[in-house]
Image 1: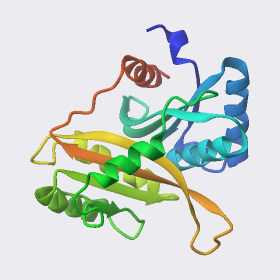
Image 2: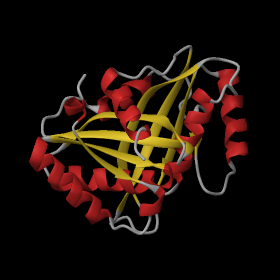
Image 3: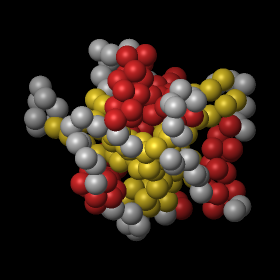
Length: 219
């Protein structure tokens, strides 16, 4: 597919940590107004900010999340770094809430199959817990909120791409949503669920592959 098909791209990188969420939302709205859809990509520590901006955009405007995936970028500038891509458009093409609900219903023991990522746990500890759960189940769900989203994406990619698992693992579904903050229920925060399943290989569409390649090709 052509480069034009990828459309406008808004990237949020680790160096954008001090950028306001509303500033990213402004870029999203500009892209939507110009082209009808926009790719929002969080890179490294910029993933949480990108997710927060996408959630805010969907809450305040008629825009929908229609394609969502995680992957690794390999460039001389980045070495290897996590990326979280979200395609927003004005027509709803996917119902991620329904897809996630169906996936959860199919799980044997959702509580035990869920890996909760927090800054209190090291990536090595989370990897070990995940592998222990995968020894018992064919599928696990990695969940995180706030800044821990960055670590959750890194964990999922290490499990599916890092050749650490005895079984082949693929990303079956990624969901982005909001949850109420514990210390202030009047406010919400971005959260994700990443479903990994044995026997799957993560397959990217041509549009997704082209997007990753374009990001890797940046100077």
